[in-house]
Image 1: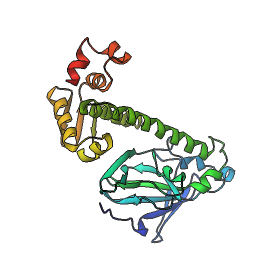
Image 2 (image 1 turned 120 degrees about the vertical axis):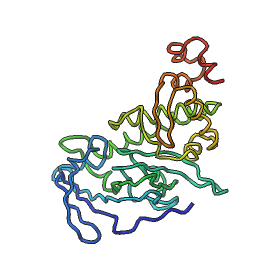
Image 3 (image 1 turned 30 degrees about the horizontal axis):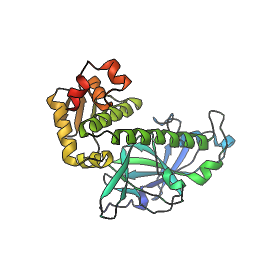
Image 4 (image 1 turned 45 degrees about the horizontal axis):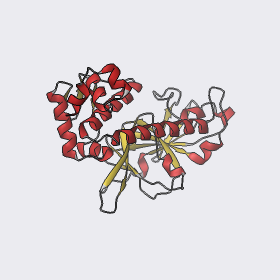
Length: 279
């Protein structure tokens, strides 16, 4: 699939101090502040505040239209990206042209650090909605010492990588579920949790990804994802309106997403319910 490539005038350079000076490629000056950013508790770049103590870090801010490419497979990895606004997906292309989705990335999360392993990106990243990212030069990032207010940025990068590893392990556990309905239930619950972490509702949210993209991520067909959502709606567990999801019975989804016989199912689900839900 072809994706539009960002143009140069969408790149904004941002200095590291808390009172940041911004200059666009067209020469328009503005002021920005990492200290005032709504993601400062989750963003690696914000640790560069107090540059007089920690050194100087130049961060590029890039706006992406829906469907626009952030980086390509095989592209040299010079930056890691912090999602400031919006949602992105990462994926790689199989020999038959099929796109295998590997992750969905939300505000406050990092994108592209898998490229640090070899120096080149193993996946491509594309915006699922109008988005904005901060491009952080990882070579400079790794050299910065701790600031007066927090650990070294490299330490936060390791923490972010560890969090991504935990998400990948959870995704593998979901993929091990044999039936489609439990996989989709687990996906909805995980998505709800990530929404809550960002201060949004964990029961009502928009799916920024398509059914086909969810299916690719879960190892299911688009039809299986659609059937699962319809089944949940018919049972009164959720309501669905296009991409709008309202979770009405999180406990039922939780029971369904756990293997039969697990401690959680034995503790929280009525006798016989897991078997009935998976039927």
